[in-house]
Length: 369
Ligand SMILES: Cc1ncc(COP(=O)(O)O)c(C=O)c1O
Image (cartoon, rainbow, N blue to C red; front, side, top):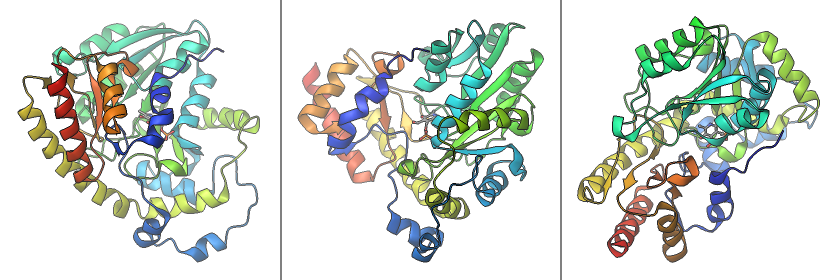
């Protein structure tokens, strides 16, 4: 299996550490351990209680239950806790897919959602979100792409990099489309908690026995460096994932699980201030977009903390490269998502940093023409 390079990660690899201002990230500003102590009830004594034994293959029972209660139907048997949702995606996709399988994938997409299927040798059928259509997912187009040959439909809402999402009715149609042909539905819901209409989408894995959903501590909960995520999957599939885990990572660290458990219990305390900030920042971005309407246009995001504006007449890669080199501001070129001309702009940072980053973008835009 030959994985292609991930342009997004290549772009971030060094700049992430060197940037003065990061307006690229799909996650909120990360929390520190001190803030976790303050917000979640985690105490140093909880860490002192940890013994460094191996943990269980699917994750600590209390943690699985807490995840199942918050994001599922309370049944922990369909939950596997993983090293980021990235590990869950890798395990699920390599377990379910075979060379020659046809998979319908939303595009643009975060690289794992399409790259793993490609590396396996699947035929990838893109379900495109088009800027000209306001990135509105075309459900009729999806219905025509999914056929009896389709092994899986792979979707991600709220979506990276556009920030658009689907309402409950559209989500039901996507589930029904997959179900009509017995296709697996691979549902990346890492931004599920981060919608601006306050609506918490249903978890399709609770509705359809061939649906698998992913979640993470890396986005709205502000803990990307904890490296914990999860999947909800049918139990027979979880059994297969356990076999794969026996050959790879075995289990999570009990230290990390202890922190994660308190983070789930205090999830609202972590999430709410970050989303309030994101909401305020979105109005800063509204103003910036209005001021620059001759140079940039966009689709206002429904969830998450990224937008995917188009900068008219600008080479996205050169622009982001100069912004980083000359201003220390990190932004992602749309080319990393196969859409040159756009940039992925993260607005989960403190407002003064967002304003500073946007000012520097304005200056560079003025110089660029
Ligand atoms: C859509 C999407 N899915 C999955 C991931 C993986 O996140 P993690 O492995 O940190 O849970 C990311 C990270 O940016 C993402 O944007």
